[in-house]
Length: 599
Image 1 (spheres, rainbow, N blue to C red):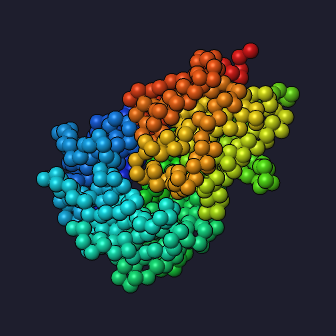
Image 2: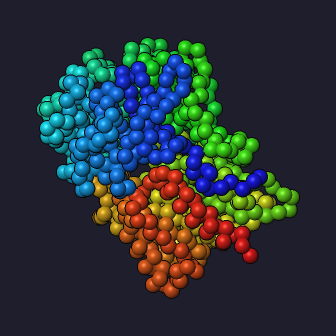
Image 3: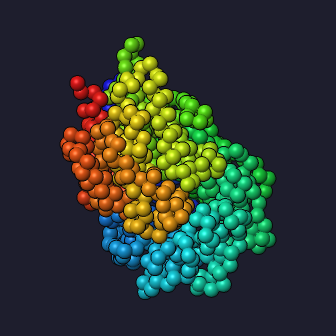
């Protein structure tokens, strides 16, 4: 297998498609020709062309048409700190008008009013995220909901009502669904299936008659459809797997959803009247999808381990895929290795799944191995394209990513095993993933590392400190948590609520917070570690990494020898753009090559 250049892998494009005009036309944003590009697909020719550029457009940016073909409402994070602002962008004149720009709040576009005069905004300017209306002409912003805990996205319907979910109970996991008049009066809770269930609203029909929701009240996350006129809730899901609602068809006859199985996420279409399901025959992992072109087609992006960067339409009448872009950035499928499904026993005898990549194995040769700890909690590596994994394999590494307890794709019980045991049961699952690698006759048991970002960075920090006795040989941590209480104190209300959902309050569970914080176990560290931290990170603040570095120095570790440390100015928590991918992949690859491949 030839070596795969990181710079070339980073050129494989990503796609976002948010912008619909009555679902008659479709636009997508992509970095395939560089940042800030918006394209339009021509259904007659099945070709796409560049439509406009939007300054600082990234894959985290969302946009909606305000005036057809002329003005967009754009939601973007211009400083990389995830404090999203709202702008009106004129595509003809290429001018931008600021609607909301507040460095202290996060403001998301939730919906556009039926009369096309105002926006529905989800904002945390006064504490937990609540819903506001914003008059585009006058810029008057009015708060219409007042909840103790953060609200979810809202939908502004033609009946004058706004529908959304929130939580007013002491159970941090609970979510209920509400309706409220757009002037902020007559709020009413309309769906509350349990005080311990997450009842989440995903979409409504424009007239407000149908609400598309999900709930894990029965364990598996199922799709429900609530008729507000009849006040009836109908369940559509009949599978053992979690499902994610996406769209209601314009004629209110079909539901588009994604089914979350252990190794891949794929499309399911439900017939509302009969409950029958249709599963299009598509390969690999579906990242996102929508009804489009008056619901005659689906648009989606997908990949599999050897096929990156596919944007396509699915013809619902003729049951066939129509590729729009199949971008390999100069690679072919033969340049990549296929992923394997493997299983291993963890500390309590439970069998866990994992994804394994390996180079062409030469008889008698031992290879270094690294474990990917995904973000989350809940993240997992599926049978999708993993570019950096392909880079590592091409350099001679075995790569494994286990589906540890807490991962999505296995139902509520499996997912919630980690509640009030963060870094415990899932931490031990990683230790036993390492033991599984040690059992493989082609793996060098003296050259096994772990790496990851965000929650994966936390788990890397934890493995090299609290679980140091497992004998890790190196680790690379990016934007990782080092102390849960310190992070909590600096978090926005939504993240505070999530941490309390995982741990309970600090006052009630101080011992647990401290026991699962890597900063408290730095003295155990034996293996070299690479620490990468973004200065503008709102989720895992820069102090998390700085405190870790300071303690490493305090116990006598030498920077450049025992650990390597880099702060990246101007960057936030998410890896956005080719430059960010190249930077992080290059640093991590170089670190593991020096530790494992150089004599």
